[in-house]
Length: 354
Image (cartoon, rainbow, N blue to C red):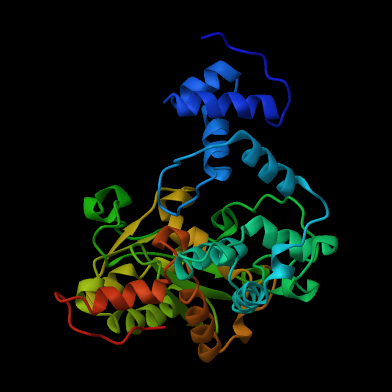
């Protein structure tokens, strides 16, 4: 087959007529793409979008060039009614999600799960961002930007600051067990009970909050450190938090080499939790914890005094974070996944800790 030169960014009526002939003849998307000089994905999207006999869950049965051209022309007309303006139910769901501090991507995923049989209740995360930041494409109040993790009123690219560990005060850790010695089962997240931990530090490193994240469910626990973040304070906060967990959720903890963990042996002795230490300047070895600490900065901005937050307030923020749908959990929430885990037949029902 002779490959034709591409005539433009969009498919023409002539190309659609050729697609109809070749598709009716049983040619594959790749074969049709080679004839037209188009990528196979372009042909696939065209056949899926503009089929004349659309049936959810079925393969494309019929494709007609004139019908496809009419559909493409209709989509190209401007101005169009914005999706969040034209559907009150969808807009209400998005607003409710933003008010719970869900990200646009989390809202998109949750919509797909909750309304799998209603295509009108779908919206992309980019549409939500555009509605928030570009008011000519609105439908959402600008004030809702305050619920986004960054809290910005303008949208602009910004690289996330790397590794607070570099600014931490570090000291000798007696008898640290390297993370390379951690059980292999912790790496694939198949077995729950393996945790990652760190501190988020406040203004001038004078205040801090401890964070613990379970690797399988991404469930988060916050440690109240009211006076300082020395080793005795961290030990005294961590022991009761770990002891409140069921035994099968106390398998291991990965931490960096900050001096706040100098009394790690006391913690292990009291909780039977094995503690492993990451390699220097290797925050990716605690990837789930690093990600969670980034999310927590929405509530605990850098440069702020973290000692003002009460245990009740920390519990409220942890509950809020644990109620956010996560893409990596199939848009379930950490709380839902942990509850499912604790109530599984092999484990007795246990109240979750926040």
